[in-house]
Image 1: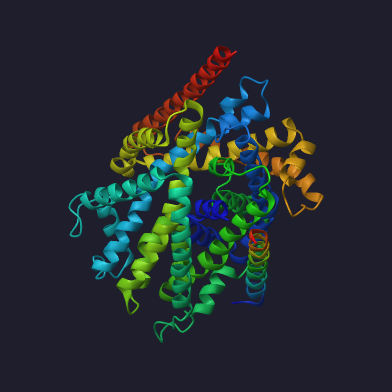
Image 2: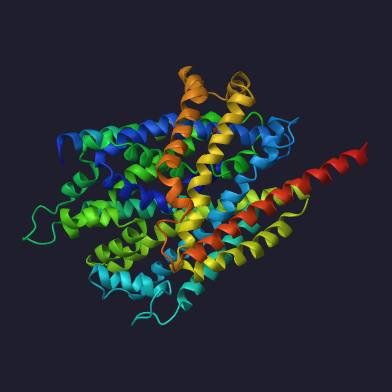
Length: 509
Length: 32
């Protein structure tokens, strides 16, 4: 149960409350839910089961991270472990920028209580507040980025503190407290949003039911667009935290008799409840009541940060007890963020522990120092697009690549029959037989389709930085070089770890 | 909120809530 909560905590993140409603509203409303649930059944659940099973299988060989787990699958192959480097690289890169964004939610919950943005009444003023906080401009509210750095330090220290006490003593205990509190905050906000009355007699159509309609009324024409299907598949990927490598590490602590079918299904179900039922009922319906149909189109397309840090504080500012509800909103986001960020650190720490035989305390120390240094460009070069670049490579592109590698290795190299038996080992539930075909053919084809569509539509503008301004290009190039260097260092660490293992094995004989 | 909006909302919520009830009953049953 504790591991299920830890995986659910990892999956439930800022995206459940910000990214999902924005994507749904901008991509066909209720019609978006059709590709979304199809992706959930054909892509999300199979990948969840594959990762839980791979993790448990690798754990049996005393490997808790992707290089070792892949090596366990195919012990005669010398190169397969290097594919697993992505499973450490991805979560480390996401941790670097995610912790900083998470610190904004902590800062804003403090600002809400102190009434620091209470006097702001329109989008430009709130945007200016956010930019001032981020150090992108000097204004009446902020003269520098002292507040942003202070809350980053607090958030980073809190993450390291939880990670230091390990999965059982730190993360599972955090999730046991944070997840119920998160649900309480979300239900409280949903209830408050559902009680909203139309704000003026001039706009009697701005009701909560019409707000829900903005989110759920289907535009079936959107189903003809490939982009909508890709967005839905992408959302399922991000929300379930598959293709990152975190689930592998958590599941490596399971015993051979633990039920991965039920555990994977339960963690996915909890995440979907938070995303579709709670996440879909707060920000978009609330913003609709205050801003109406016309402005909502622009707001839904303005991006997730704008929704969370500009639109929602403005909405909550207009309610009685604005400070309290603002605090609850940002606390909700902070809890969702912290249960995810602590999980992102696990693959790197488990890799150092398992493959270099160093103590947890020392591994956390190494991770803490390295991650702290890597976080600095995100903080000081935010305006140069560094966070977006890290998000693209660590949090988007490599997720799909890694998931594709996992599926191909597990199903096609390890073998479908063995994979099917391994999934069902210790399971009470038996998956329907058609899932064998889905896992073997549909899921990998779906992933290849996503990768293919990306290469077809995006690779030239992305590789040649066509959408990046001339001013930002040197920074983006430096970020890419830094990422490449990090990847090479991790690959070298894998090489060193295996050489030492081989030497130890030879010495023992 | 149109009729189709309601249908999609109710179907989605029912599916998710039923999935959660099923899973937690199974997990808690197994724990005992």
